[in-house]
Length: 163
Picture 1 (tube, one colour):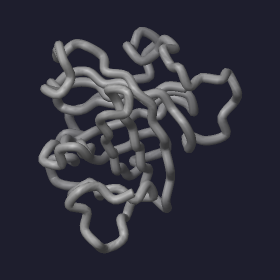
Picture 2 (cartoon, rainbow, N blue to C red):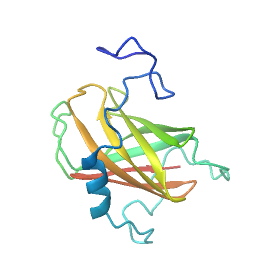
Picture 3 (cartoon, helix red, strand yellow):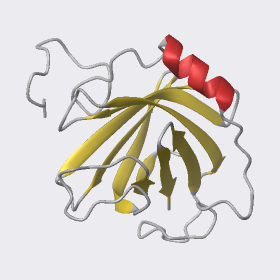
């Protein structure tokens, strides 16, 4: 489904929503150089908080996930604070050398898309777009810890995935 103001041309992403503008931009590359990811056992994304977890071994990162983010404010969520986790669900699809992460929060009222490229076997570098307010985009860096955990960082906070 195309979102408001979606160009008539086919989307690059496999979700058929508005594409992320300039997912490999200079600001994305510059931000990636500042992020040091470590799959630490004490990372905030290490404990299993997911509602999508089935305990089933996953063969790849593709598929359904739980998603959550904090940092930055969403004025559309009552009582929003920068340190409050907003939880939702997510889905990951791989197309060629691109990894796309679609997610929602506020019980599906808000949706975002992350368009990334792999840097090595476990790092994702790209950009996020708020599909409800496309003027909001941020660089995003993800660390694939395993097929059940992706630790994500954007300039104002975290955007993590678990299953």
